[in-house]
Structures are given as C-alpha cells and as structure tokens.
Figure 1 (cartoon, rainbow, N blue to C red):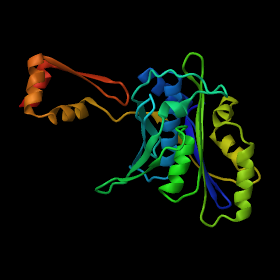
Figure 2: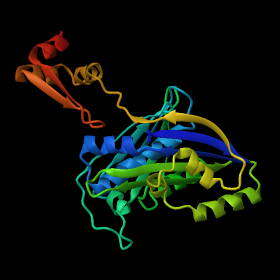
Figure 3: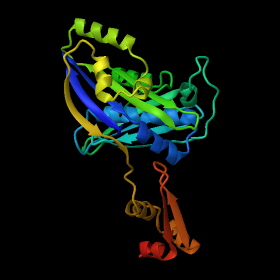
Figure 4: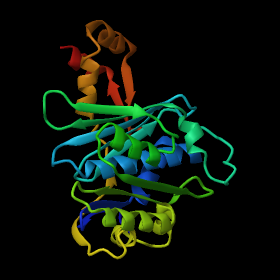
Length: 285
C-alpha cells in the first residue's frame, strides 16, 4: 500500500497513524543503512511525520537525536504536507541483537539529548529538548512531549528490517488525550494500548493507518478526519547548493575555481551536485 497518514478523533482523544514502509526504504537506500541504522532512521522519520501532523501548512519540524552511541546524530525533517527527509551520521553500524532478539537501536543511539524544532514562520524557530530515555526513539518522543511540551501522549514506532537490510514494514502512531478527557476514557485507552502488537507487525499483517487507529480506539466512536500521502522528499537543488558555495567566501570559492570543478553531496538525501570550472567562475562574478 502507498505510504499515508490518517488523522482521527474520538471521545476526548486524538490519534494519528502512519504507514511509512516505502519512504523508510528510500532513506535506507540513499544512505546505505545497516539494520540498526535503518531502524533508527525509519523510526525518527516516521516520528517526525506524526509530530508534523499538528502543524499548519507551510510549517515544518526537525527531530534530532544527539546521542553518544555509534550511530551519531540521527535527524529527520518533516512537513504537514507529508514530506520527510532524514539522515544518520554513521549508517554502517553493526551491533549484536538484544537478549530479546531485537535490533539494539537504544545502544546505537546511546544517551544524550533529543530536540524538536518547529519552524512556524516566526523570526526564530521554537526548539524544545529533553534527555534521551533509552534511545529507542518512540519512548524518547513520548517523554519529550510530556517533559518539554507538557502534553501526555503515547508514541509507537516500528521498522521491521528484513535480511536484505530493507524494511519489510514500517509505521507508527501518535495518541494524545485532550485536556477534557475523562478518567474512564484514559482507562480504556490504556487497556487498548496494552493489547496491541508492535506497529511494524500490524503493518506487516496488511493493516493500513485507518485499521491501526481502529485497533487503538477499539470500543470508541471514531471520527476519521483526513488522509495524507507521505513520501521521502528533499528540498535540496542545484540553486540551493550554489547559495551554499557563495556563502563559503571569495577565497575558498576561488580555490575551487582553480581546482577546475567541485562536487557537493546533500547529507540528507545523498544527491550529488557537480559544478564545472565555468560554472564556478560564473559564481565568482
């Protein structure tokens, strides 16, 4: 099925769910990720898309994990229109499985800080942060929402990585009780959450985002609001790279002219932009 995100509300609670298998595979392919990096990057991109669901059009969000684990920085940018891009600093990390036979994303990320930056059109973006809980991404975003934004929530993320290092299934959900939610509603939500399987296995079983929401809100009268198509999409372009080169300063740019060529690689998507000597000379004028 195509990657998509569905928003819904029910009796004092809002929930977003997403299927992200294709875009996660795009990220894995562009960055040549080994399994631990694939899971960390996929979860972070999915989480960013879910958090971006709260934004208005033309706004954006950046989720960044700065841990002391071997993966280094893991980052994702997302928009409410359904675009996401991301990268992991060290994609070739290989770690033993945990004692439960799962990918050790927590050890890969390590301890440090998770930060969320919202670009809302104001002069300065708004950034909140908190300490990484376990590096498993979903728990860390749940803690961030509670500590930094004072919004009790539940975030579930999953990437099922196959033997060929590709994602067999990926997705996530974001569930948040509204301020007027009754205690009885919260109890029912907790009961439902305790009975759901991992979100990646729900996607692997063929469940779309709407079906995941139905399972999370079993017993609730659900009002499905919108469906948004999702994709891995970078904002880089040759024009933007030209602006980066111009920012280097006259001396460094002249050095590139003397070299006769330049190649710049976007760290978010891996796209390579090549500039000939003539193109570089034109930038100097």
